[in-house]
Image 1 (cartoon, protein in one colour):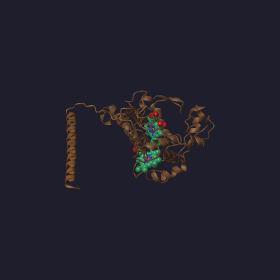
Image 2 (cartoon, protein in one colour):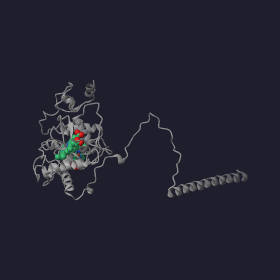
Image 3 (cartoon, protein in one colour):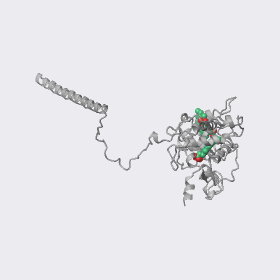
Image 4 (spheres, protein in one colour):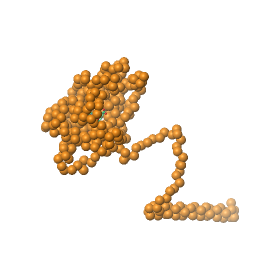
Length: 349
Ligand code: HEC
Ligand code: HEC
């Protein structure tokens, strides 16, 4: 390279650095203007990067915005009136049922030691935690299980007799009245006919195979046993009236007429709520694990309930109702564990 060529290169480099410097100044200026407009509240519309709709084949993932998720009314806003006190007492009974109505209950001894809240999380206010959001707007209603019109007292009594394997407090008792008033208060802002996001339990797709107690047992040992015990017995600390970890089978668990005894209901409950800390948007179990756990836990021994009067119209039994007779010719075993899709297909014919 001679001297001449060298100076040409240098002047070229200088030109480039000038251009770079100038563009930097221009960018800073533009940012300054934008910030100024933002600060002064002026609306500017930048051209959208993609004006056209996404191709029809693209999967559209719709995450509902958080404000659409159902939320229970604010407990702190309850007035210091007799009505407010009754709702607070109802909540207390739902949250700490055993303390008042369990085997050593301070009011009555009529239930097995579970709390309503063990299954209706956060006293029936957790999204997809088996909450009470729809009770106020849907009861009284005709239920196919009993074949009768049921009010909230009847529905609460059902959970006492099945999930709590005991007896219900009398309809006119202060305890029943308070629980009913509380449960209705939880759903008071839901308009009739509306099904807000987060209601009840999450939906789960059916597996193509039968749910497997053997596979479920392996998951249980890994994910559940630490709290619920090596024999499903749960944990109750000495001197406590309620469980730290409630039992999942055995004498002190829900009976075979309870909602959780349906494999699908159990799977939908655990998917969004267990192991403790799981939520619908942060689940810990896969769908298969949830189904297999439901099969395992519901294959273990538990109290029996005479449910011969349930489902007066047997054609209305849910696909996974585990007790015959049925109108479709499938076995009790297939109704209990699946696969459910062939049963559904046969019913549609
Ligand atoms: C072992 C679990 C468990 C316990 C304990 C339990 N429940 Fe339930 N409860 C359920 C299940 C499961 C359902 C039905 C969910 C479904 O099928 O969608 C249910 C349904 C209900 C419903 C009807 C909800 C609706 O939207 O139709 C009410 C009300 C209710 N329970 C009240 C109570 C009360 C009050 C207690 C305590 C006295 C209680 N439950 C204890 C599991 C339980
Ligand atoms: C860290 C401890 C912990 C682990 C692990 C755990 N649970 Fe639970 N589980 C609880 C507690 C605590 C409750 C009661 C929740 C409440 O009252 O708020 C509960 C409640 C339940 C209930 C409803 C009440 C009942 O007794 O029927 C079921 C069903 C259940 N768990 C199943 C499972 C399954 C299945 C697993 C494993 C995937 C699991 N849990 C893992 C602590 C745990």
